[in-house]
Length: 195
Image 1: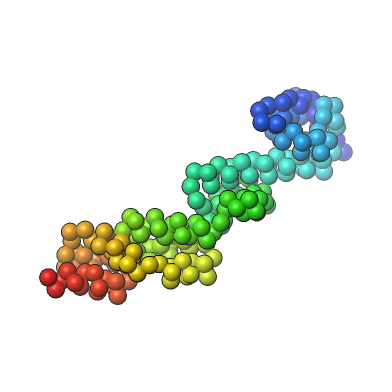
Image 2: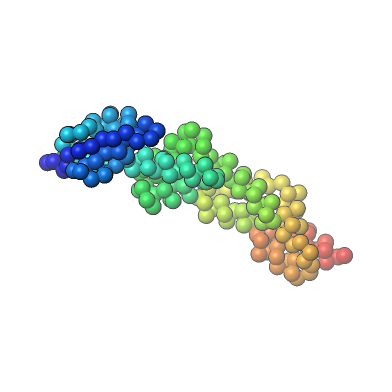
């Protein structure tokens, strides 16, 4: 059963084509992919052909969105898939993430290391780093390896940065609030109490 007729196929930018269905703007596709799907003026689409073209457009949109996101900042795979899936569906998001991972653009280990370095530089502790990585969808074993691999001197420096000029109870509270464990608090804030 026919679900529409392709009434226009117009070249846009970057080897893409805009496709009209029954006189209305419908989808934009990579020109080669459109050709492979048999997209041309006058083609009468059945339900399966229409669904295939719409899925191809959704996958391309998801890949473009995902690529733009990782171009702006590092993302964990789970976080990226969840955000892209909201608009383009889980399958398209998964396909986009797989493509970016295959290209080496999406890498959870690199993302975890970047987040850990950035959070330490801001004065956040290992517990907060673990929370942020878990929230981003980083696998539990990678999360554990990242937090366990933090340089103790960098953690201590982050703790010092977190407390600034605070002393006593204020310093202890600040360290707890910023995600430092009791051992680090004792080592850093405890030494302030002794002075």
